[in-house]
Image: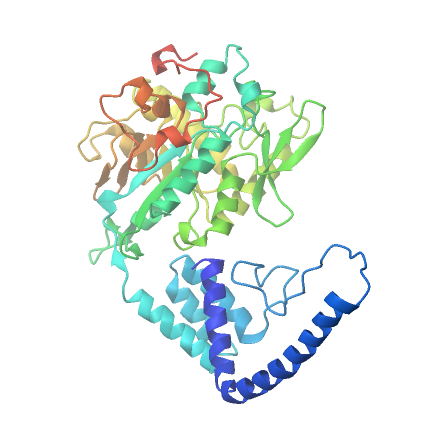
Length: 478
């Protein structure tokens, strides 16, 4: 439920409260109208025909006693704050807006206002809406992903040797916001990958994977989002990207960005804070507080902090940076984000030797997972698989090793709308790249034989025309 819907509901409740006084109020109002109207006509006649002309200043609109449906939010400082049962109902409505009707009902039922008729009415409304929800088919959950977002296209597309790579693999801030708006308008709702399926212990004591129960209104479409390489590599410095993650004053993860004049600013300079802003404005875009999956490598630091072993003796703030990463990881988890491996060295895990594969996986565990906490999701670098389309089995030694290390969710890159495979002890899902390469070759001017993104957006409306075109094919990536 959006804030606008809440305000409408708030006014309906207020109307019912005062409606029983309407007959008496109508008589008083009519009398006042007749008397006041007479005074106004007499005064207007005098002012127009008899009073001397005077210069008047700019007209000041009257202050309104109540905020309008299109006006201020009741939680804003300019409006009278909600109190008592109205405040609790507002919080419950925010939960219900994110489809967590059980939590909304529990909040009201366990509050000191549980016996209030307003609370009972709100609970009845949640129950009624909950009864209309439809269970989502997890085989039709799409997964979109991004890399670090370009904040300043003039720096990213300045003609240097890195331009082509950015143009192919990155998405600009404007494109990202247009994609969010398009998907929101088309009924997409962000869910966690853990909402799709999870591990349970069966009656025989065995760990098995079972489908989750994603319950949404008819017509809503669940999707998963992820972001790769949230490391802010050194080579990106000065190219129009954020420089690191930090914890904002509101306790939520946000970004710092270094400017040319040497100053550092804090704000919405990458996917994490931009998505958070959007969900705060559109709570019905997120299922029960879901956020995106954030994936890290380890060889050049994590979240913009140089924490790996190569910086021992080089980074004087090494231990402080490692502690900062621990705090940021917990902050991300506390705010609904899921954390994932992107391998330690950004390696093609299906092509390197098995010994290299083991070394890379162990480095991830030792140098990254030790900081961010247990992680059961792996997003394959380059989308490169460790098997074919058949479900993984323990005969696949790479899968067996990753499974032993605790991984249960395995994501490749697949341009199809859906690719979900539920195994006995794991889940696999294909991801769709929403980057310069994919969008450019979906444009009508590029003459696509097949369009891949039409279910998500109108690419002509989303594509950032500040990009150099044509976008080079991936084979020409630097």
